[in-house]
Amino acid sequence: MGSLPLSPDTLPSDTEFLSIDDVADRLGVSTNRVRTLIRDHHLLAVSHDGHPAIPALFVDEDGVAKHFYGLVAVLIDGGYTRDEVMEWLFTEQEDLGLHPAAALHTDFAREIIRRAQAQAF
Image (cartoon, rainbow, N blue to C red; front, side, top):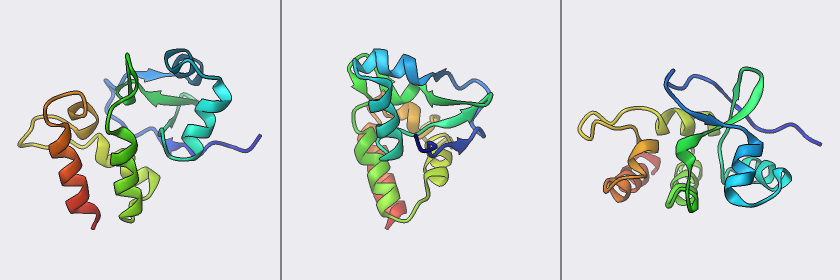
């Protein structure tokens, strides 16, 4: 099996992570499917303590966070690397008081997508 594209773990120290097994359980899919989602940039993961880890903010009780796929696609299509996308997702937007990964779970989700579109092009 090929290696997964993992970003370095430069995320805030309070970031909660899920293992591939945890994400597979939450999504009701196989671990191979989660690995495919990571390879296809539908999920992003870091190397955390030597293991693949997905930030918990990327999934919720309904599956992958609403708008996550589209947000990542906009940034990657706009020229961001996977590592730059991960960094952008966890860089606080001062006027919102949140970073984009957290904002996806609030009323600011559409604003975050608008900002990604503006930055990516």
